[in-house]
Image (tube, rainbow, N blue to C red):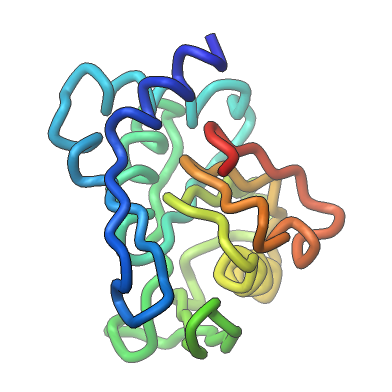
Amino acid sequence: MAAEIADLIATRIRDVPDYPQPGVLFKDITPLLADGVAFAAVVAALAAGSYDVTKVAGIEARGFILAAPVAYTLGAGFVPVRKHGKLPAQTYAESYQLEYGTATLEVHTDAFHPTDRVLIVDDVLATGGTAAATASLIRQAGATVTGIVVLLELGFLAGRGKLAGLPVRSLVMV
């Protein structure tokens, strides 16, 4: 099953060189999202094994697309983790390094309850900064991070190193 899902994903992700800036090879998941059968299979694979979560945190922007149906599949709530300045109420904020710059993520201060068990879902694990910042936001709110699951992991960037102590699962490793 893992090999099948990996093949399915690999054939539906397009590489876009020099986007969003020179030297970056962007992994475009829009062909995968456009294939209903493949999209459903990916959502099921991302949700597999995470049955004890109460919330699923999706990271802006492509993580939203994957996390919301994973939350639905698991019968859990969905919490958007947004870029700075995009949420209307009081927030926790966390800044971090990207592979090509810096950014800040935010989450509403009332998004999580201390009893929440939260699965983080994103499209790509690269340097680990985004996932680590998201885990920090969840912990600031007093909730527990149960794990991180991603569609694609760029292993050569060693992002798992920033996520010590957290279970990380990727559907495809590049």
